[in-house]
Image (cartoon, rainbow, N blue to C red):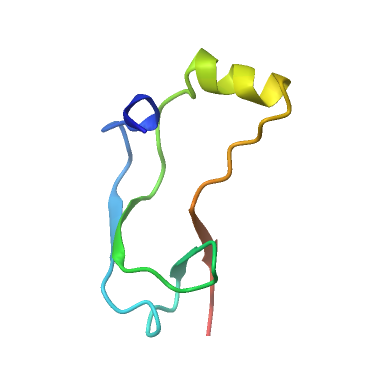
Amino acid sequence: VSVCTTTYSDGIIAVIDPELSFLFFPFDSKGKHVRGIYPVRVKARIPAEVGELESRIIRYRPRIQAYHHYR
């Protein structure tokens, strides 16, 4: 986890009540909405070791997904 974590990002979004959010809806692998602070855009590269996993058909699946939701 620490090798895939960076402090280089452009802004943050704080989601306090995901059910009331009109723009940003993070959710976990079970479809449950998650509160938290998320980067708007990350300026970093995935480490080579993580990229090598994909060449072995071991895919990285983030536990938290995000999508835009407009009401």
